[in-house]
Image (spheres, rainbow, N blue to C red):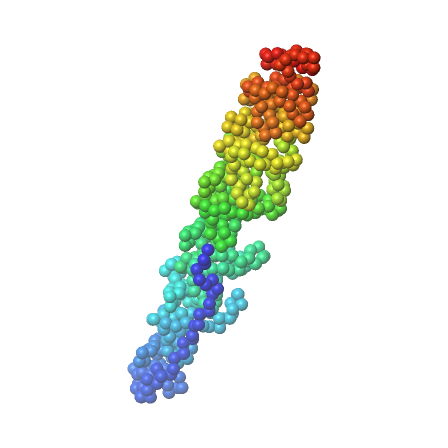
Length: 530
């Protein structure tokens, strides 16, 4: 975000009016010769009426200048004059000043020693004539806007709705306007960075003021194409915020998981349609906050964090959990549309996948209560998108091949596309060190795994694998085989579906001989063994 120009107040030079005595010289010595008019026979300038009496409490003009006669009849000099409920200032020569700033020595509560007044074209001080600040009270002087109290003194700093300074460390929290420092006092507008005291601690915050100096509070505002959020005290909210007003605190920089949430840049602009790598707010997820665990988040076109759903982003599909963290690695969901839960250890600062503490065979055996399994790249720094087809997944004991359908769901049972069996997505292979073939338990419908199937079983005694489907180290079904020999010299015979009809250390022969005289029927066909 590019903030609008200056945010540090600049002092404005304001000159006390100092007129020369030439105005009075224009009166001339001849003035004192008349019975009526200007007279300085007493050493002070007076204005005499036709009876020769000094005029008091009144204005008289000489040339282009007005002069005020005090209650004693003497010309007032270098002082504020109150006349008919208006305030004026006459300089050291006694002339009324116009269109000028005048400063006065005055100790203020905030430690400053000057106050300022401005006298307009008619000589009258600009001032507030009621007890409320309104737009009509704002005066524009040399392109800047100012406010004045009822005595005509320039207001500055944090202002409330009444024409008084709002004092105290928490003035900023309750004020309505901000009008700079005592030596300027002009309405601040646009972005201004100020140091404020919040609960006894100094805090630097950004504020946004309209052209009249009114602070933006408890709202979201579009500024130069960016959306910004402001809390109930007027501070621009950074990092995390509620996306909607949360009673009673309005837009809240401490959102909870029940809130609609946005993430804003360090410069305050709400991120839209963007990835965010961030640690959640403490109020949002305290464990991740305390352990400084960052996650990927994504914002929609309104700036809201995407939560508890699948979302297609630039042609790839991603999942987000119930608070909006991108899901990575193996994950489960009831329906594959929402309720995604990463199979990770949430207490681990590195978000290490919990399934990596399991062996592949243990994962195959793991009951998941009917939940569907998906795989989102566990290289979350680079991708995190949903994967399909064959995938290499690391478990505690090895890297296993898994298979996921076109919708990302982990394969179960027989997968005709690859002609292999899978359980919990793991392709069932004969990966035993002692055998390069194994059996997969199936139902009468051989396309379905037996309900108690725990993966691949291996030969123990003759016939121990009969009725199971024979697979090799690649998971390929071994159909229509006779005398298929494994690395342990065990022989197998299978039908057209790969179902094991025979498993033994004795080879099958079609012809009887002295070496293999024993008859045996396999699959309805006669054979002989040793």
